[in-house]
Image (cartoon, rainbow, N blue to C red; front, side, top):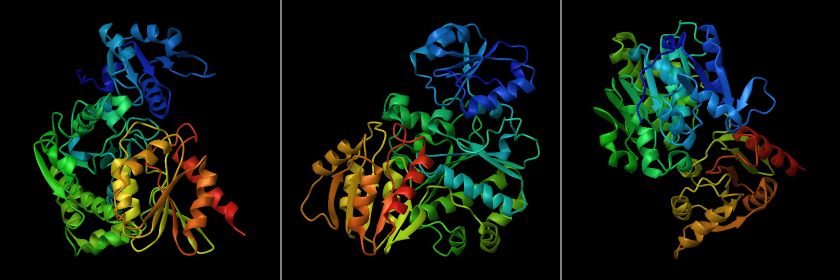
Amino acid sequence: MTRPKLGWSDLAGARVGIWGLGKEGHASLRKLRALGVEPVLVDDNPGTNEGVIATANGGLGALAACDVVIKTPGISPYRPEAEQLRHAGVTLVGGLGLWMNEADLATVVYVTGTKGKSTTSSIIGHLLRGFGYKALVGGNFGAAPYDPDHDNGGYDYWVVEVSSYTATDLAVTPPVTAVTSLHPDHLPWHGGVDQYYADKLSATSQPGADLTVANGDSELLRERASLLGPRIQWVSETDDPGAAWTDCLGLPGRHNRRNALIARAVLEALGQAASDEHLRRQAHDDSELATAAVGFTPLPSRLTPVGTVDGVTFIDDSLSTNVLPTLAALDSFPGRRVALIVGGQDRSIDYTPLAQGVRGRVEPTTVLTLPDSGPRITAAFTATATPGDGGFAGIGDCQDLDEAVARAFAWARPDGVVLLSPAAPSFGHFRDYRDRGDHFAAAMRALSP
């Protein structure tokens, strides 16, 4: 599968289609109209949107008549329809890839990883702004850098969060990239775990790549060092024990300390790539970093305290949609008894590591599962049962989040933690992770006297 090196400026006068009208699709539409191009609009589920053709009801044929089709990241390039379009001579591209092919690569950093990339991207952007630079944080979350609503040409640096979906659209890599973690995810979209790893890490090794700052605590990443570009700088959570500036970010957990250290290494490398000695000096100075770190706002639904009821603390970590961040969330509460609520959309990932991690916890821990992946999670715990499971207190399936919150609260009293860290997406039961987090908070409030 080739990765075209077209830029946005190459689309003037071409027959262009947009496949998928989500956030990125609408940003692409605004960009094309700014270029004087009126595209064909196609979506799998167009609803009542005027002028949008359903993929299965004439949309694929309309796209096949285009020169170039800009697909939204959620549409897999491995879908049969995508192969049909390529066979018809259509060039499939992504909006971010079009922008990157014309960007000043020395001022861009990619941040990817199964989990931790949003937090790390946000830390990098916050520190850059604290140093006095104008920085845009976008990509997988936040603004699309090519969106005319945001691209005013005045940014010093661009921090681009790259998902495994978006990575397949990228034909170039900036000199500095970061990988925060690696764990199986999005397997149906990629067609298997090995393809997921290859697609995810391809963001670090396209033409232009130089240095990848990577999570040195990940065995999966170390085993795949050959996929991480020409040079690697490994960063571990125990590095630089005197770096007290990380506390100024207000982020709990050892994994977030590592994310902050990755951000620092990225800033130093960015200063080198952009010949910005001022940035290099600031990123190397703990006092400068501490000053810049103040005022950082954590992401919503990422280890967010939502309240205390009768001595029990409720934590919303709904953004954790994979085993890796859920285990990291558990580690953020040493010495506390925790009722863990897990489960959601079933993406066929292996929950054995979750079961092993929970069973290895010393503190009292109980698990409440949610549909649809709940039964598979329970099966993983059953299969990993061993004598002497530390503080593991059992697992129970629940019909919905309200039931799980009530049962978790009853167990966690009088001074424990109820932790919503689902290790699964929210779709099928909630609009998104924020909706799930809001429902969790509402269920907590319903317990109040």
